Amino acid sequence: MKMSSNLVRDCRKYYAGELEKLYGSDEANALIMILLEHYFNIDRMKIALEPDLRLSESELLTLHFAVKELLKNKPVQYIIGETEFCGMRFFVNENVLIPRPETEEIVNMIVSCRDKACLVPTGYNVLDIGTGSGCIAISLAKLIPDSDVTAVDISEKALEVAKKNAEANEVSVTFIKDDILNPQNRDLLNGQFDIIVSNPPYVCESEKSEMRANVLDYEPSTALFVSDNDPLVFYRKILEFAQKALKPNGEVWFEINEKFGKETAELCHSEGFKNVEIIRDFRERERILRARR
Image 1 (cartoon, rainbow, N blue to C red):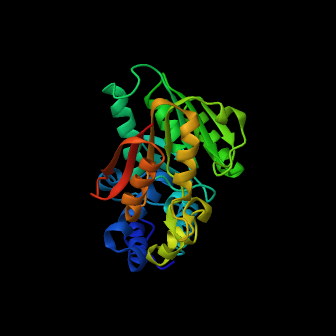
Image 2: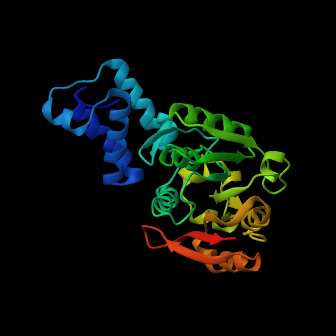
């Protein structure tokens, strides 16, 4: 380490400079602040008010090794082991995808529809397919306390993370291990849900060249990628399942690949769904689809 001192302001400047080569100035500074806040409870205000604040030798080592991981393209969320979603803290590791802002939008839209009585006016049953960290299911259970939420995933390791997150956020969610491409669990097959929501794998294998190394090298590929030969396989299977599992006038909510918005909507129509709506996210991209049985 070649820092001039162990003053926090000097450490911040030095390590931001190291990261800048890979992440750019703004993101590098933001990443250092995430590490300082997470490990040492040091924010910008504290640095400003205590210009002589220093890190101990052990704290310097902690920061140093975290930066080394960042320089390997490892996502900061995996380094610190957590992230924020819908105002809640979620544990994450390399067995689950890192929750993203556009997924928060689906949650907020469902909650908004509940508040506006777009859906059933009282409590209702929700199924989250491919739950991963549990971020969608747990957030809906937290934000709509009178809901009954079930979450399914094929990965036992992902479900372990999701269960930990449900406990940490003090909500009750029923977790089920099953493969939605060939569901076997009787509780799923007999379920009568008001909402089925899913952020399934939808990135084509051919799109890998467009993705950053921090995603390709660390996030679980089975939760991301589908074959170019059948990019809508999960949507088709979920819609077929939803025909049996949704109540009349129940809704499906999907996060979708913007490149296949039209095709996904057409698939919904062909499966007998109505009121099919493609919604733009905060970046004005067609990333959310809603349809009614």
